[in-house]
Every structure is written in C-alpha cells, then in structure tokens.
Length: 123
Image (cartoon, rainbow, N blue to C red; front, side, top):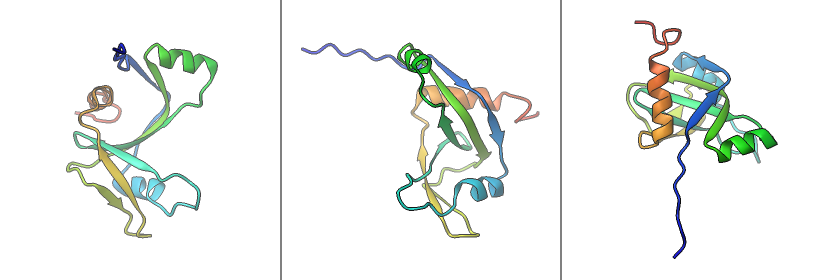
C-alpha cells in the first residue's frame, strides 16, 4: 500500500492587503477577459469575498512551500455578507465565479485573522 501523508499549510505570508468597496472590487476584478487569459476566480468565506495572487516562484519560496509556508503577493477583498456563485459587474455585464472556501482550513484561518485587524475592521 502507498503511504499517504497530509501536510497542511502551516503559514501564509501576505505581502500586501487591499480593502475595496464592492464597486471598486467589481471595477477592478470583474471585467472582460481577453482571449487566452485564465479567468479570475474569487473566493468567499464568512462575509468576505477576496482574490489573492501568489508570489512568483523562486528556489526559496519553493523550499518554503514544501515546508508549509506559502506567500501571497497581494490580497484584494471586500465585504459580501451572503455567498453568491457569481459576481456581475453592472457597468460591463462581465462576471466571475465565486467559490465558497469555507471548508478550506488555512484560508478560513486567514479570514478570521483578517477580520480581527483594526486597520480593515475598526470596532
């Protein structure tokens, strides 16, 4: 029998975080996609819809990834109380798919951490 080992992410390093209004988020990320460009996919957890961009791979980040650390170059997010499968930009009728990532432990931990940061969620 093949040995199976599960090694979940241990650490997410985020280099930049941008909070957007819903209108800004739609204008910046829900727009026509040129041919041969992969579609943008947003993720949703606990009232937050977000898009992240992984850092470019280097020998160091590849090694860190194997050890459980991932790097996100930037996270863009906005508040969206209810989950919706797609977001539509009313200005250009473009749409993107939204994935419910609630069951993703590492990303859920990131959202819980994010919501405790006073610069983005003042009490």
